[in-house]
Amino acid sequence: MFQATKTKSNTHSAFRLAELIYHATVRQLRKDHGNAMVGLLMNMMQTVVFVMAFFVMFSVLGLRGAAIRGDFLLYIMSGIFLFMTHTKALSAVVGSEGPSSQMMKHAPMNTIIAISAAALGSLYIQVLSMLVVLGVYHLAITPIYIDQPAGAAGMVLLSWFSGVSIGMIFLSIKPWFPGFVTVTSNVYSRANMIASGKMFVANQMPGYILAFFAWNPLFHTIDQARGFIFINYNPHFSNIWYPFWLSVGMLFIGLLGENYTRKNASLSWQAKR
View 1 (cartoon, rainbow, N blue to C red):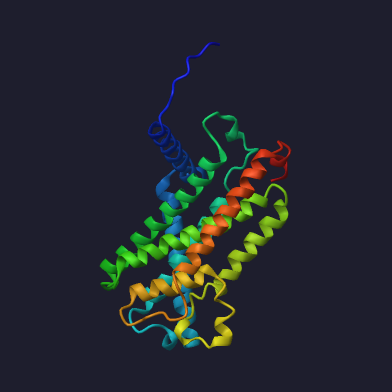
View 2 (cartoon, rainbow, N blue to C red):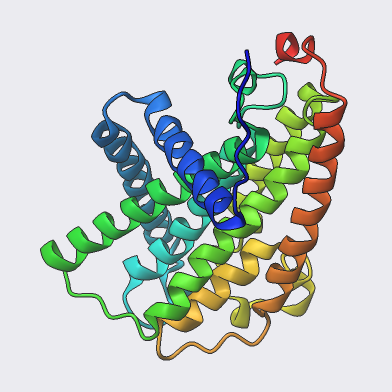
């Protein structure tokens, strides 16, 4: 009934928040599969299927000559890895628990923790899958060489960050228009199969076609990543700062929208999901 209040420092609060995000992330990873190894293997298989499908398609259509000079499978994987990182981050954020979720009835829990856990869980699974697939390819098939590993890893993080930011926009309006958000987010993810430009090299695209891809932050991160991976490719028609600042802007807009939605949350929204 009576409880003594304790003054907590900012450092203590930060560690407490980090601990909550950690436990929420573990819960997020185990939500679909009780065995974390099964979830990892399924994600790896999805990645391998994507890579093999695009490898066969490029070979059948005779598009291998349009790729960057170097390891052809590494060229395909560079696009698939970033595409899946971006798409999975967006889906995880959109599917995170909202203000009317049952988990929000527990005092330490809030929507920011749920969103952070969903985003970090997605990043963890994608990075781990990427490292395992690249490791197996390096050891079992042929050694791979990445010209600038730090820059390539940065583009993976930027692809994830842009997916989280776009996901925040969808999440902020999801309680108001759940059907619209579900359809629109799915259409965006499917459209990125082509619009991400993972099948093309920006330097070889005509200007009138390039205009159809330049709006997409994922197009820029994939093209820049290939510039870091391959020593003989220098991207001229993409840049790092466009997806970064666009993602920062969308993240702030999404946070503002999520804050407004959270303050006007209704328990009846949970029944609509």
